[in-house]
Amino acid sequence: MQLTAHIHYLLYHHDCVTVPGFGAFLVEQKEAYYDAAKQRYFPPSKELSFNEKLQSNDGILASHLSKSFQTSYERAVLDVHQQMIAWKEKLEKETLTMESLGSFELNREKKLVFTPAKGLNFLAASYALHDIPAYPIVRGASEIPTTPPVYFTLEKNKSRRRFVGYAAAVAGIVSLLAVGSNGYLDQQADAQWQAEQSLRQSAREQASMSVYDLGELPALTIKLPKTKAPAFYIVAGSFRNESNAQRLVSSLQRKGHTNARKLDKTAKGFYQVSFASFATKREAYNAKAKLTQGQYPGAWVLKK
Image (cartoon, rainbow, N blue to C red):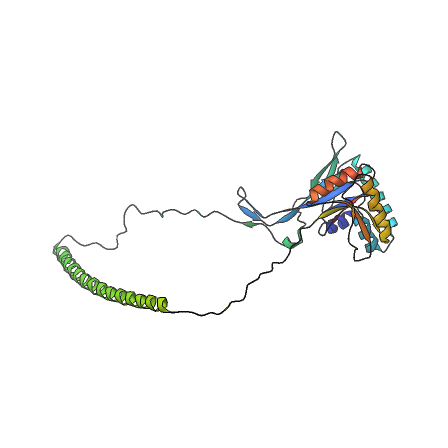
């Protein structure tokens, strides 16, 4: 059984996949960012991490294996347990490498140290998106040549003096034409401006004397769609019988879990009982870790 391949697949659909007795693989979304040192833009992603303290069975991995291999849920749990034992035995001797996930090793305190594989991205929306180069644009004045280019030269003789005289005469004629042309254009612009001012004044007078009857306008109402923020529930149990679920709620409330309640009936006909609800995944998993270390080792997190 290639268990690591199934874990890799499930991480595209779940933020947490637990291997009972070993730990939990978690993914957390990261926004797109620009690396100034590498001068590249990186797409949004989901980065992989590992938490050794989350070891209780959340049912995700075993249920997936049961459907994939057409076997019972109990048999799938047993197969996962055997694979977990094999991993721990290998860790006592050498580094454990999981293809498409990363590698594990034991430190001096016999704690698992996880190093994720490079290039992993479990965000399906970013599939096939690669990092792209983005170089800064440097804007500045172009270099000016120290000496202007020479296109032709004139001999120092009478032809040069004659050429200078012609150039001066032509420049004088062009100046006179420019002065006359500018004066004519100024007159045309003044006339057009005066006409536009007259039209504007006439429009203002007509607008001030007009009366508009729009009648009674209907009231405008805008209904904004209600968005429901996701909630994370710590589930204590799931029942087919609603009365059994209600009895568990009463029992939890008597033991001090005042926020315990029965959730809505699922699509498969189950009634789930929750210890409490949280706004973020991190808060839910922190609270779950305390419960699983106490009297409720089978508690798991549900996102709605």
